[in-house]
Image (cartoon, helix red, strand yellow):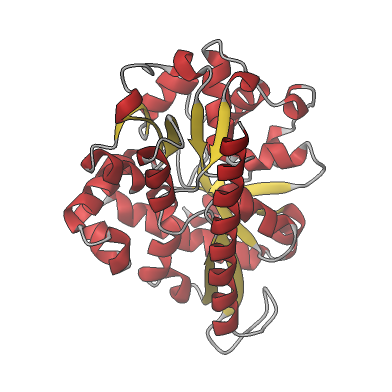
Length: 351
């Protein structure tokens, strides 16, 4: 346990240090204009923190920028990146940024903590997450029932991968106290942790999944990249990646929020009419890590999770609440007003 805890602490510290440097570099390069104000002539300035810019589940963020849709709406959007969605959430509630691209489930969790945050455009109707078991442990871990006594990789404590891992365990008869969550981020740090035996299994997304399978370092245990996979694992549609913002800021900057939603809805429609290879070609070159074919395959595997119009899926919020109530005592014992966790006002206007 001590070694695991130490590893998790070191992994998180390293990732936070790296992401902080990245954020500082981005801040230094940007103008010092206030959020929601006119900056250097590029348009209305907005900062958005993404829980991993290179993750395919959050692809609409960088893709909207690459397609020029922010610019066409008169916005100067600065995209910042943190390795886990929970850190994007922290940046939002502390006022460092005006929006966060992360999982919708954070809006419910924050409401129980007295924070009013809402999703303004829903990118997905499935988690896009995959539970991968290391090749060495594949014979011993064949379902979440086998999580007991295992070290399970997540992006960060309090992240959506943490939430979903706990739910899958509890649903399959394993108590939260009977396994060890290990914060290992995503990408190279997740892959290294699995190869070195620091984790037995873990929850991650593409392109990490595609790389793990290509290296034969891991095998699929549960695939929640499609609505069907979400239904099977979680019992319904699971709205995950979204743009969420503090409600007070939304109400005070409706014109800016509408422009953001317009841009994202355009991107979701564009994604639904273009091939994985065409989408991959629009992304930053380094996202493919030297293997364009594998990267296009990662996009293809994850595309089914995305909505085509940014609309919250029917019964999606209820599924999320059910999942969180299964293990989260704050939500289990609280009355959550789901109507305040998302709004369709801006998506309806965009359509």
